[in-house]
Image 1 (cartoon, rainbow over the protein chains, first blue to last red):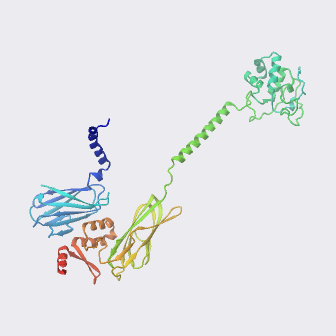
Image 2 (image 1 turned 120 degrees about the vertical axis):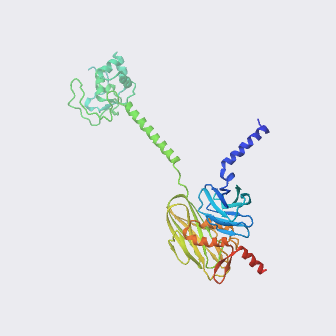
Image 3 (image 1 turned 90 degrees about the horizontal axis):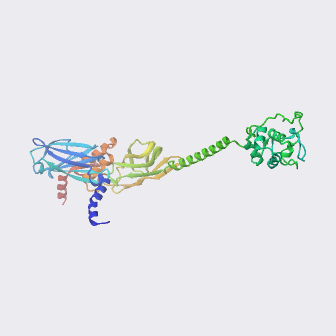
Length: 136
Length: 351
């Protein structure tokens, strides 16, 4: 017999089932990332790229004032010192882990850095932007 | 022989190989003489069942020899136990048959060759049970074959109708003399080996530079590919250039057609944007703000990334993106990258 209590118990199962039907669209971004502080002035951006991988991604790193990138692997594609921004344009991206190594002119706390990744989602065809959080 | 019948006597030689017995007469005579079916059967050399069937007219024809033996045992003339002999219209007399000299005094039958297809073995004048079984088996086999054929035709994958779509990506503007890409996406379903003809362009004032794959032919008006292979989703790209003498606002219209040859030709027009204007903006700068932003560079990469012959075009756009801004140099007929900071200073100076 129908009881509101039963329906409330059933509702989470229903919602979970729905997300299981559309896992990629509902729960997962195609690209996620992590910012890590390495020894000295080095930082690392680690990207986790899922299948199907976007064709090209743009990574933007926002730096604190008076901070600059001395060197990077792969090389920076665009630098806007006035805005405190550097960009990487990476094409032919493959699913898996992608690491960007970066040496700064001074030591910064990872919490002071903000990064984001932009790409065209191959599943939806829409532009997406995801924030990359940092951990020391 | 004690002939009881009144009908005309028939010499055995006049009889055909098979005769029609009058079963009721046979029974009547046999019973009158007090003979059992077993006795008659033994004397004729058949089974009691056969005698019974003769008497009950369940076998229409009987071998001549058996009929003669039967008449002999019943001590009557053969004509007494045959049907239709009295009126002479039956089939029991062979037409034009002569009495034979081979008939013995004891009434022995002449030796005749019996058509094995007409007459069964002794006492079996109708199709034998094995023949019946063979007939039933053949019928079942035929039914099974028809059923199997029906199932096959029902389940057989129906030939999918040919579906063709073709769309063109064409930037809606480009600076005179600058290279821009045209991408034609062709989708043919079901995917299989076919011949495809792609024709696009059809406008003077456009220079066709490079085809990816290579053009099969091109002239001042259009480009053409003839492609043979497994067609499913296929991409045709070409790089083109608006005449460098074109002035701002000049428009160029594209027309294209896809033809797929199967049993007959199927042609459809290429859909999508078909108009490009001469303007002092990069083809990738879709909002014409002199800035190639992240979305625009990603779109350009999405369109041309991985295509070797388009790398130079893509690199030119990337240079403009990384500079932050650009402007059109009218004299040199090319784009000049402008650092974003410089661009804002220029804008302030203009104010």
